[in-house]
Length: 96
Image 1: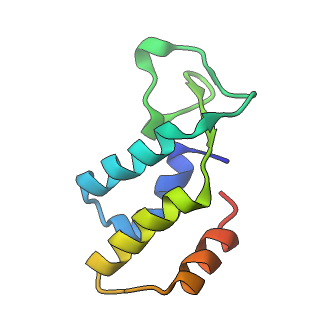
Image 2 (image 1 turned 30 degrees about the vertical axis):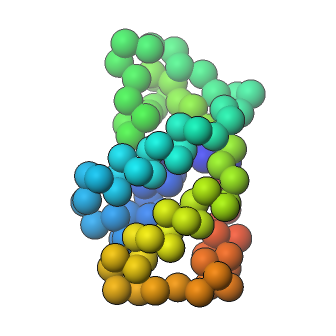
């Protein structure tokens, strides 16, 4: 479970400012189920990359399998091919 900003923070070393990768990660995050404590208090100004308590925040439950495919692709693009064991270790180690 995480807000979108949490995902960006964890994976920013691999994203390296690549807007397309941010969009792909957002698509994965957006498909997750919102948690019960999620609330957007100002819909007009809500931005998931800059979520705050003032405007609200949304945390989503994201199956690690969804992130695994994205992580495999981006790490390979960056020249760091990872095995399934390594990918699982990274995703289990990061309690988002």
